[in-house]
Length: 137
Image 1: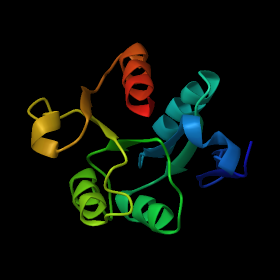
Image 2: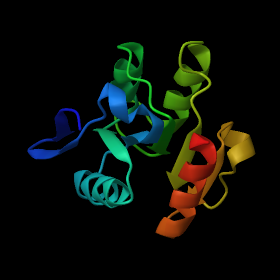
Image 3: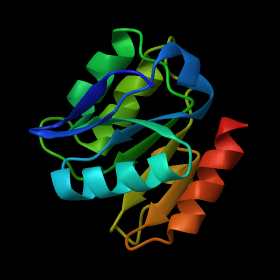
């Protein structure tokens, strides 16, 4: 596995070049939720890179990180999920990476957000795993 990265002092494994097929960029500002969800995804074979907001996620993507799927919260500081998705769509190098949004907004839909899937909090882990498997091909 690649390097370790996390929010604050909570490291999680980061994808190396060999792990691209099952790599996921998790964009979540809550460090406890990010660590828990990242750890759970790792147990199911996903290599997780955790970023605390949309701005840092875009920095990682622009620096060449290319995950198979992005899982993104909507409500975050600095750059929220809405602005992150707009920036991602504006960048041809990363626009095609599929996105799963996790949100507590009951009105949000995948079509409105221009994402591949929208899961409402609280969501079933099985639903997220199914979407990741579907989108990673």
